[in-house]
Length: 406
Image 1 (cartoon, one colour):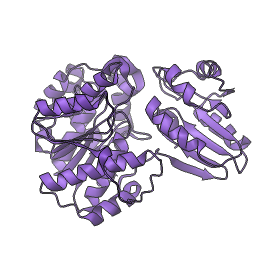
Image 2 (cartoon, one colour):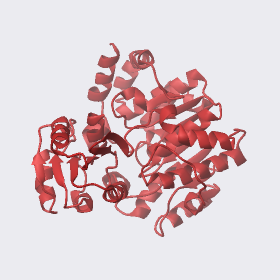
Image 3 (cartoon, rainbow, N blue to C red):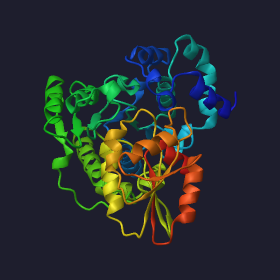
Image 4 (cartoon, rainbow, N blue to C red):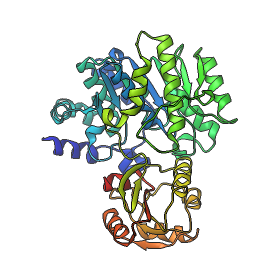
């Protein structure tokens, strides 16, 4: 198989949560441990930082990778989901894994994957760990896919665990209370390994403190940090919290490991994060007259912050290109959106995409009025055509909507 055929096989022959939803979710680590053993436990050769959380874990992971790159290290970065190309998930110093490595890895091990019904995510994690081991990287920044305790990445023993925050997302898997979700995320806390918590509430903090105590893991709360000025091209207001989390993580790494992370590397790492890592889709500006912003926020807590920033902008009229996946609780999300905007409803082009007409009907219950379009691209084109120079266009609701625009 060539690269495109290989990726197509990975996406469509085996379960992939991003496409299929609940049917792709594995409830234990049996397969991942089986795969790790088959591959000769590549994860044991890696020095890692493990990053979990409801929101901000992608930005946090990219900030960390950028800083370590600026400090002169060879840095592996594993994140999910991707926006355009599968290879975005696995990078070394900002360079995506080669098509040849992906094709060779899948071709070599395909019969094992089929024999043991490996999921898309399990295969991807095995691929990343094998690639990082072969490249002999200095450090790997590993982002959790979903949850923590049962996530396929949770076979590593990191140098540091990071939990950005807790919010209501994937509640059908992780629980419907903040404390229950926190317990799943806290599953990445390891014996005697320090943990940094980005944000906490009165409901989640006791969970983190209790789990850390049980594991004899020293715990640090980044939100208590007083942050100096660290400029960055990532201009979403929510990045302030992510920066605190990253800075606290770096301070712990400076004090507990042999990594040398100069202050200059932190400054330049924050400033060069997009250039170093290729991060996209976080309050990303696509146009100026009219202003066009896209953001991958897709749950209540993330959208609340992004929409607050949208409404703080100066504009004459607001246009919102909106699409979602079909397993979101719309009664929690749609009330966050402003009524004084024109909506362009669309369906992201994946099996989990919510039909645009259904989204329009649900949105109307909350006073959000707009038109249905056949595709994300059509919706965006019409928004661009109708918007005037002083208007503002926001594109979001789903990672997959942003991916289609980019």
